[in-house]
Image 1 (tube, rainbow, N blue to C red):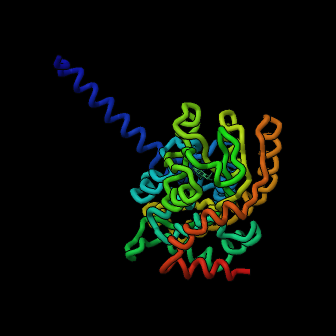
Image 2: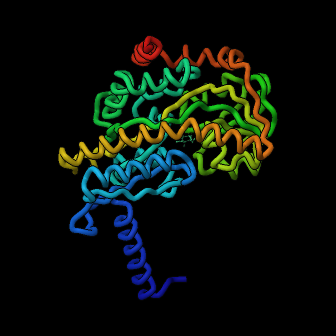
Image 3: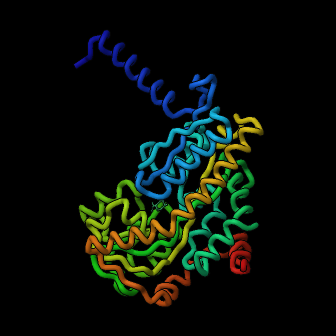
Length: 342
Ligand code: GCU
């Protein structure tokens, strides 16, 4: 049946209004804030507000407002409210969000050099991880974010790293060695290296966003996943997955990224504030990390989750072929520099 013309017109107007509201809510803009013209930056991340990443983003906002003397504010959209991490990267390029915190894992689909962060057992330990990220290699990789592998602008500007610890398997069945992964379906991020790692260890890899995972675990779409303790705990995936094996197969940092469109709209002074606020929030967030990891593990244990220390050498051996496959060409030079970092 055809809708009466007036309904169609009213419907279209409502639709148009909706689109305007969305653009007004998430687009970069200068606002008439308290005390005159101010700027509100839209910041997105996919984790719950109880996660240390959210606290880091709040610190970023506080610092930016302080540095800019109140002229700059941020509005944070957590928990995948504005889409998945891959979508954030697209939205940064399009200019519909200003800044996002994503895992380095999906970034590799936009800037291939970033794939090295997903390589199994890339870092010797947590001290080595921060030595690399804070040093020339970390800086060069942030700079590399500006270009695709063909040298074209990527539409992304790297601001800094957040701690994301190490990723370990959690599942509905006990895993103590790679042999236990046979026949299991394990969720991974949108990241070919993570897929290859899980396959090399004997499981099937299923990609989906973090936000879709709880339901998939609950409905048996996947048997497990892998992540750091704060993410496993704050997502409440432990309500379904009662086993956590600390094999720490990868340590993929989180990255704070601005969209080039947003960036180009800033004055040099404003860019300086944003960069400085990112650095300060990174130092704040990494300080929280160790305590939050300990607290998450204690709360997981108190909730009855079995937490097993793994014989990492077995997991390392099973995933060795992935490093051989991906650390070739330009990435191999980066991997060499990472290994040489002391
Ligand atoms: C980590 C990371 C997130 C990412 C998540 C995932 O928690 O910090 O940015 O979304 O892993 O597995 O999807």
